[in-house]
Length: 200
View 1 (cartoon, rainbow, N blue to C red):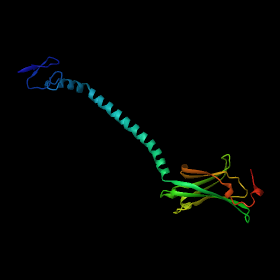
View 2: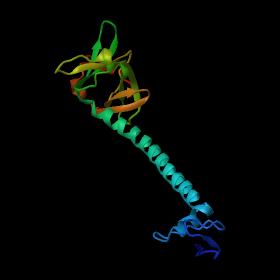
View 3: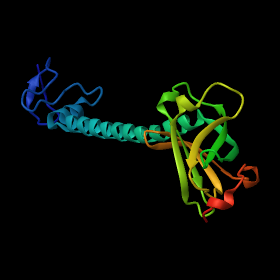
View 4: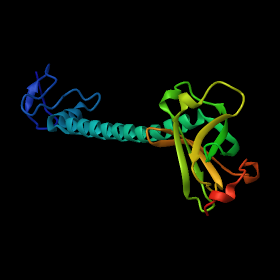
């Protein structure tokens, strides 16, 4: 017994599920003839390639975005590992060496465990924010575990410098991680004769 293909009209054996002429699927339960057309034309294959490309592109874009964000997040996280304030700025004249000494007392409330990776940069500034002097030291050398302020940025000058403010920065690989600034109370400077070498 034979039957006809619903697509091309050719006769096919009754027990056959496919047309021997056009390849059409004869079982009509799920409209498989349409599926056969899709597979035969390669449309499904092209659709799969398109989906893979789109998903892959989105994943790559997402990863690139995450890398950029993680850089910012890492810097923010690193900055949060530090907590410090300037408690005092001191100036002292040594008449034996005829030098002026300056230093900053910093209260460290929080520091990370890998102190050797950071440096402390202390900058002495005039009233126009110009640099008068700068000192750099390793955090691991400057810091020790104490509840009291730690003196950093020891600066020596053969002449009086009119310090108006100071800035203390925590730096890693050239990037400022944390900083704090303070105006100077010049009344606290212990200069016996600043007028002799004073420069303005």
